[in-house]
Length: 448
Image (tube, rainbow, N blue to C red; front, top):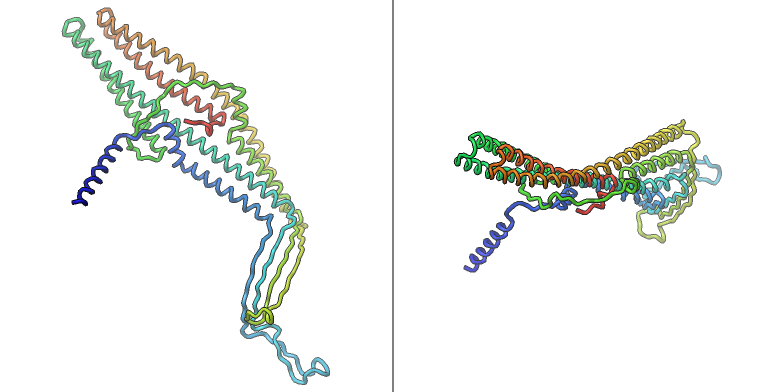
């Protein structure tokens, strides 16, 4: 009985927890961006590239350190080669018979260490080490660029979904107002105050608004599906967008924005680092003709019999070696490689100049777009105020019999369009600010 009571409690708690979790998932703009960064394959791949680039620094630096190797071998010879010395071939005093002996030992043991320290490699190792650090910085800028791209895409998709949600709200309001107007027109028709045409015209407007509402709902579903796909969530997930479109003005200075873009845009940093890598490649290729100097030290113990008796059987030997190599002629291969590397460097420099011009134009365009979007929001907000007042006047005059049904329907349609236009302007302003931050290279600093 105690077990069944315990099971009942567990089932009750589980049912309560499940009930508490019912309903759509609340999703803010910050949640959407964070989720996108967690699942975007390009961004995750860029993070792994950064990890690999960091490891490449240690790999390049290892060329400057000595290399120490341990060697051990045990050999048993089978069928040793022998040398035969004929009798009396070496003169008086030597054995009168043939002598056969082996110049090799049947058993051989060897244990030793060898250290090789590069002293000079024509500048290749140090240049490669610097290039590895530049590549790490490039990978970091690639990561920044990937992050900017996914933040921009996620925020834009979220704004589109919110706009579609607001459009459904406006459509619902329009249908509710139109339904009320149809009822009022029918009442006036029953009282003999309006014609049947007025009733039919009001019903036609209601059907049109209901159609527009269905279209708005389809648009909202499509916008949500795109957002959910971007977040790697099931397309049929139920979500509630918690952030709304709002007018939050931001002030930008054009000259300061141009300077910020020059300092912060990851694309410019990418090309500058690519130029540095191309320059390092020229140096490394050219250094192929330079001499290389290595110092080698080795020490080993060896024995001619399998034994651990170091005192009697083992012998020691060591070696110090200084080696210099200097390529004299390679058939002009290095010269050709240097020419190719310099061509790549020149192409990179040209690309950076073109990109700088494009970013300058992008910042100026984004600045103008923010100004235009801000003015549009203000005018659309004022337009909504005018449309609301106009509808109130039209409805009051219609109720008093001083205005026709068509004029009321026109005022209602104007109000619906004004509200939709206002929400579109809010979305446009939000995207304009997002574009401006991206043009300035500040999406990474953006906090939602």
